[in-house]
Length: 259
Image (cartoon, rainbow, N blue to C red):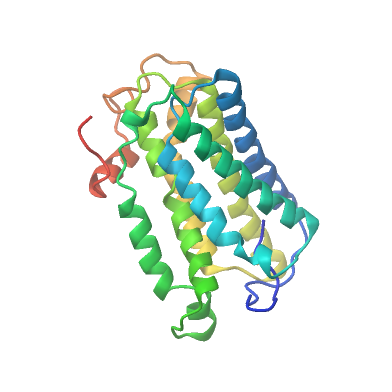
């Protein structure tokens, strides 16, 4: 869902935009990722392979981004999508946190190295900064920018877990693939809007590019382990012994501990 139009205390972030096919496919892929993950948790009664830290980060993202629900109305489509994302994320966090069959021992990412830089960056590079060329304290805009930056890297704990676990279910992999497709189509949405509307948002676009690039390594893993069904693609050897640049990034950001 796109940002809200101007309302009391909610600055306008973008001109009004009609739905386009890229945004719609991205939204549907995002919804599919929720249904896939919920299906896994409900029908298998196990949260193995699901990173609680990634899900908690996503819940934080949606709560911070959709505070405009309280002050502005865009459309029923937007409002229902926002409510669903918050409610579904909260339920997923609850189920994973209380599951007796989980893989929390493998969920070792140091999320403080994601949250703190995203928050600091949001304080100094936010909508007010881009639109007025200066810094001012606008809590709504800081939280919105924080949610964009945090979403870009929230998948890292889940990616690290995928590389650590020796067995990952196909439904978890399909869930991750749906998230990657969602981000890819949202980038195409920005290209479409730039070409046809002459509009782009630097914060959202740059963060979206970073997030999409993080999925590149996963899609190689997805192609090998799910589509080609190659054995021993995942595992503690670092995705079957091949080089993983996301694993390297994890170590650089001090997110990797011996386990």
